[in-house]
Image (cartoon, rainbow, N blue to C red):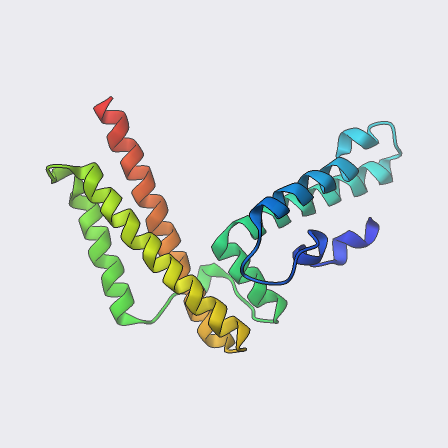
Amino acid sequence: MTDALSTNYFDLFEIPVSYDVDLAQVQHRYRELQKAVHPDKYANAGAQERRISMQHTSLINQALHTLKHPVERAMYLLQLKGVDFTMDNETTMDAAFLMEQMEMREKLESVREKDDPLAELDSMSADVKSNMDVMAEVFKQAYTSGELDDAREAVRKLQFLYKAKQEITELAASIEDEII
């Protein structure tokens, strides 16, 4: 398994290199991999074997996280194609998209003033999910056709949408806690 450190995550998990992944298959393979390299299995081994086991475990955990997370998976696919992608300096320049994001953030800030803030958040969440699905399709088409700049732009937008979805979920949980 020493060559596992130089393989890509898709090969490691024995799945096709694609944005669409079978999460059940990923989870099943994760358990198989962890069983084979878990540090507990090497507790009585030499220092080098324990270190390699830890490295493999870390790689497997990172691969699982990346493959399960839609935005991270898209970014990783671009990296496999040689696209340098760090979210720190990546933002979309699509003015209409950015305006929509600002309007949604304003709605989030005032949602507690609504008669039924949870219903409002459910509606917002459904809209964001729908937009995420559309943007994932845009990414897949651009990536598959080799339009890597368009795929990169789709990832930028997916990142915004994913963050918005998290904020909506967190706000809904906070409001639910206040009600209880």
